[in-house]
Length: 379
Image 1 (cartoon, one colour):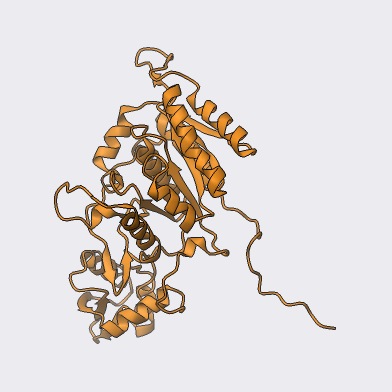
Image 2 (tube, one colour):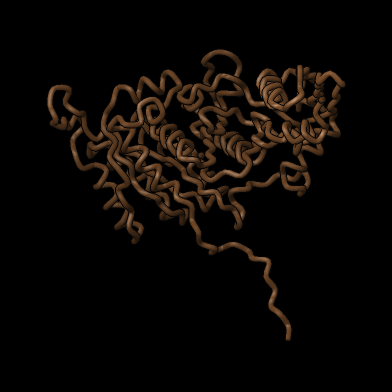
């Protein structure tokens, strides 16, 4: 007996759009369903844009979901493209029926997304590697995670996450690529082919950051990590203005020269009134390959020095969240787009990053700052 249309639609409701991460039935992407008496099911699917890079994934998922229904002998998937009106309806639906106006969802008082701005005083301390591995660890722990590669000049996050595809545009919304269950956006995804440098001044940097936060469809994230450029330049100031509730994560290495510069990067919070989530000491030591000794390649104590200095400057305790040892596989994983916390979660560096991520990723149960739609009862 051929299956009913209700059964087919129920099966299609289990298929998520790979970019938006919501059911295709909910997004209005199912154009039609035709069922023949001999069990052949033909499903029409509306793509958001022509040439959608993930249409093969959608075809595979639709075919798999419908094929599992009793009575289905064969599945055909026909692709079509949404009309401009349908795309506008989708855009409005994704923005919560608030219309097409632009806003930074994470800056709203009711936002439940924790935003971490990962900063460093100087380059070369492994800030991007730490960002990517924290994101991958949080995603593997079941959180919905996004990453903004805000290091416009030195963008490296796409490579470190193994992202090669470009974002998809739906009207004036951008669907970010997803890698390792992490939504990610970077200026590197919009550049021409090749390693062309970005030559922008302050206003353009601020505009790029604003578009990353407003035009990109992030959905309901638990955590958003922002990989900032080193120092206290235009992007750091823009983040403070656009995202005043973002918490700063300071990454440093053990040597005192790096610690002094990292302290200056963290001290910006005293002027912007942001909170510092803590300090992460990267490249803390090198495990000896022949014994259990720790080799202090870059000295010792820089992370704690930064944490103590920032505590004195801000008048509030800034913790040293962890010390990540040197591991060549951490660098190799970044080059290959495979974060170490996923490929070898028990490695000492990966275990420390996962521990830090678990602490940062804890959801707040506080209702402070949230607007509750409660009215007093009149007697």
